[in-house]
Image (cartoon, rainbow, N blue to C red; front, side):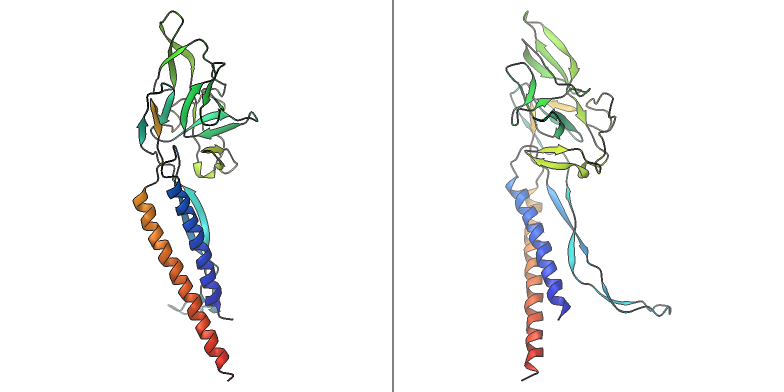
Length: 265
């Protein structure tokens, strides 16, 4: 059987996966805090037709057997900040993640700072209802208070019952990882720590915005998606042409097989 048939099929599969990733990026172009994904290809083990005889300038004769997906990485560069009138809406100007407690009590991480207070005074993420953690990994509760602002290090200022500005004792925590691409995506713009990502930097000590590789908090704002439509649409064209070219490899290989079969006639 002609190897180019299977080589073409591997190319179709790889380019289809890349198109799936591009489609997901385009679909999330307006998703708050979304991070674009990128597909990296790699060649498959080559078939050796003839080994090198050791002579100078004479190498082995090898034919590649196709392509596969090497990795699907996430671009964690910051998106544009969108201004908001909500006092508890915040974003990060660069690296880092906000920390939340999910329904199981586990710590999850997010770039989406759509925070608000629940009926018990706990600071929660509005889109999930998960409670926000401070720099020590504890849930933040501010009772009988009217928010004023959140500073760049996560300190919350509020008005007390006497209408005086007060500063809350703990700050909104911000974690960072040595390998953010190792985080597991949970959906809803949430991430979970894995062995590949490693533990958050400065784990066990205070995780303060602006320290341990994190950037500072920007108040009254939300981070928009970092998807660049011009890049995605260009990649879409290149991927489509790659898919078509691999389809042509298969049809051409089929023609060669047809000629071979016709030799019997």
